[in-house]
Image (cartoon, rainbow, N blue to C red; front, side):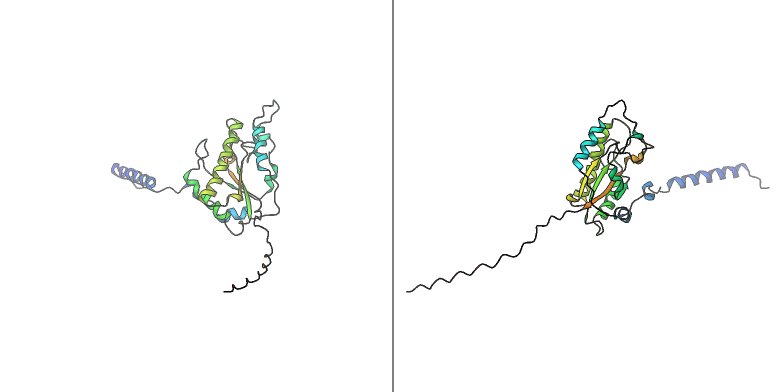
Length: 230
């Protein structure tokens, strides 16, 4: 049996401390690296067009805001509220975990790469013919009405970044905030997953090109003026 002297124990202790320091000095892999999205991830989820969806976005915004102001005694808890826009659940959708500053629509710098990957997908040939709805959500904390407003501002922020920073044509993008009126995980209304932003394919880009007209008939030649006599 090997016998450790006091000095040997001290040396082992120093080795343990050195090992700990080495581990602490090693750079940590970014947490988002495991869940970083790619352009192909987005395309795979969205490239399933069947038919245009009939969604009146301004009317939906108003409906969401009005329901969030409900003060009925029989109002169900968040986990039992029916989805306010159930048709959206049947459309091609990509859920993006975009990080915002607390209680603001400010996108944190680490999430700009994710928005950029979404932009790459939306400009890919397979998705270029389509229009999309950016849907903001939020977990069930705080006042419902405030949550709707914040989710709308966050959806608007993503749309603005896609249009102004990544140059996606504005006519291809609309935005709506559903607040906590359509939770992504109703069983866990306070879970962070309910903060995700959805990109939903809603239809084809309208053809705004002017209709073709036949070329105008060549104007009849005017008779030549008689030469002046001198």
